[in-house]
Image 1 (cartoon, rainbow, N blue to C red):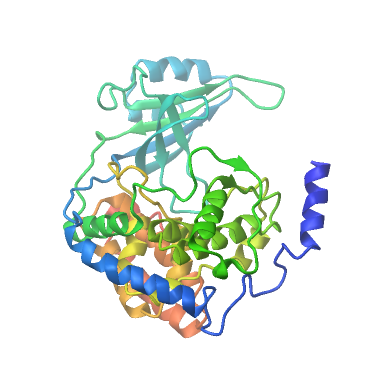
Image 2: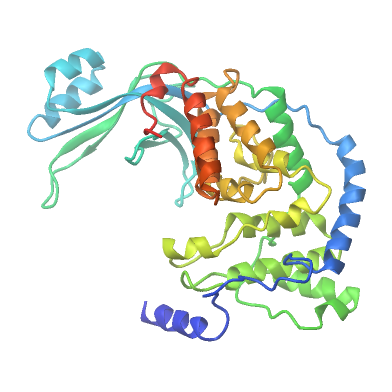
Length: 413
């Protein structure tokens, strides 16, 4: 810990850390890539636009499986009795009557996620989508759990915490009120995801699989190097995993910018775009990261808008969530994508699209809620106060179009 703190101080005073804007060198074109690099990118995109015609933009994508349910928490002397009742599948109304001291939140949106945990186990997580100020709860179980037989075979999903010197014995979890369901995304949203997959080329990764932690310097004369040397330098950078020691360590983002510039110079669009999207989404490993540093890290959406691509579709395509994504599909952070869209030159189009997603009854509940969070992030980064107020009024109208069980959970605007 002391060594990391010392390294952070060294970085802070060595010029690697960004304590003042701009974060990266800005060229005469107002971008972080010079005009020569942008010209190469435009040439690549012009060629790509022809290949887009052969992309499969009509694939059916399915929403994350989701359901509704109630969260409960009970602590104290009656936990063991309640645990036996829950295991015996007691009706929820009887549970409430028998244990009035239990804390309950009703009619929640619950979403199922599947992933491999750090121990290599296949895990299923049933997670609450929180719309209020509290953190959403979740319940994890191994995929082979007897509670799961193709679906939730028992509506009670619970965990038991034994009494210790620090907390009381407790029982907590969800009571699921309907079967898990998934639904196909409407074509317009499926096409956005397909467009994002086509544009990012899911067959290629930014970094190679076998990387080593370290750092590779970018020579000042990198653009005058031979193509062979540029390719070798890019390969070295893609073989290197840069981990930030702390919030002030800017090297992971600098490393991504260097990869992006070299990729553009050597016409590797698929690597460039992933590197740039990582910068936009601030997707890097750090030993620690304080919230005070987040605002310093820009999104650089304008660099993409200067190219002949549909940036709005790309942003929505990486923000939507589906159960059957393409392998290596690029997912964007809803908060960072919202912030990026606030920098867009097409704000009217962006606002209209987000409101339409929230209003669309054919779109699943979870993605409609994500559109709400996308809008909130977007509006929080709008500098014009009158524009923010106008957007808030529009948002209130869209909230009224959500299902009744969700409407009361939104915080007051």
